[in-house]
Image (tube, rainbow, N blue to C red):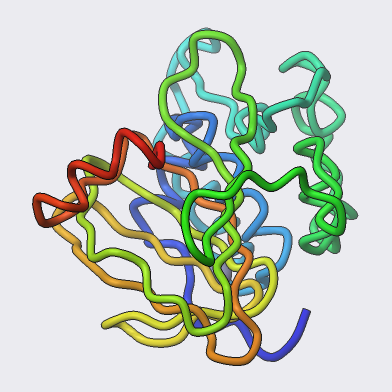
Length: 223
Ligand SMILES: [Zn+2]
């Protein structure tokens, strides 16, 4: 970890995470950011408390257990009831983990990712999701100074920087920063001119690339 985290999860995403309403890919990336970010962990504690108050008085079967909803990691073979030590047994120690441990938990060694080339200066590795799960979770490596195609989104997308940095219309994203976008947002990221960028991207749906050439390329490059 280097520097201070400047970009955080939206309140709406934290609420969905707390309630267990985020899909598997988004939940995995939100959990990884929470591991690195004390600011968002504090926000989540508040949201969990508010949720607990709102749900008080509901029949036991209707109470969402936010603890059990915490990170549903792809590749995590621990059954839902056993995650985080079971309901009420959240293991705070996992929050001290960094990008390497997160990558290990999704079954990847960041130093030895079996990258597949998408195009000049861009590589990806698609993380396997649980059977039947919708969405997409992939590591992306972008060469120093590489400009990605301008694109919009068909749904929510979370991008967490694991190494290096990138910049877009909203600012600079460094290790630990997360970009939380929805379908109204369009952007054109550029990797750091010296460091390049390795990030993990979770999306509910496929991204929408602007321009006929990019749309034609999309089925070929698979993003
Ligand atoms: Zn944060």
